[in-house]
Image 1 (cartoon, helix red, strand yellow):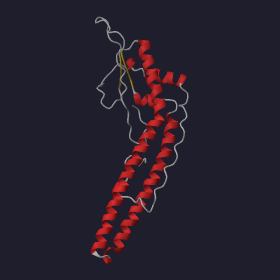
Image 2 (cartoon, rainbow, N blue to C red; image 1 turned 60 degrees about the horizontal axis):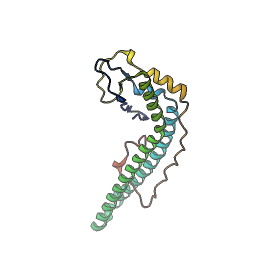
Image 3 (cartoon, one colour; image 1 turned 135 degrees about the vertical axis):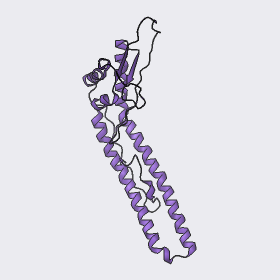
Image 4 (spheres, rainbow, N blue to C red; image 1 turned 90 degrees about the vertical axis):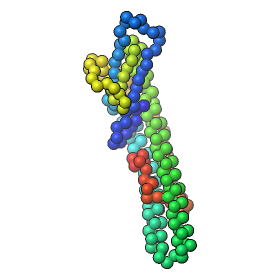
Length: 211
């Protein structure tokens, strides 16, 4: 499926298979292709979904930053006081820091999952509309297969541009699509309990870094 991305482009394959009765062997198959990234960039509602997603990501990243600050403070405090701690107390502090790290890593994973789910929620109406338009064109023009030239594993290395139906897909999306259905804004993620949920230096997320 398509994804809204900030820096890295992630284009998913759309492969519309042959349906209906088998064609006679003497009848050549009608083939076409699309460029999913071009279509997505022009799809109604895509810019709005991207903007909403970026605002949500900022909320997730803010929470990660708080977690990181907590952990840095805990490490600094341990470094400052470790020389005067007894061996037993020092060992206990080290264990506490390890547990902080583990809790934080789990929380960051939860944030990443939330960010991914939010992205999918925002993009689902747009993706459904694109798929419906492609399915309609395939049936109308009796195409056997429609390939995606932008798919990550695509094997198309050369093709007649006359077979590119991306402009037709975009035209129909813009003619009948309008903006994507409004999605309720997600609440900002609550800040963690600073007393009980500290963080780890290694825990900066990859998805929440957008978060």
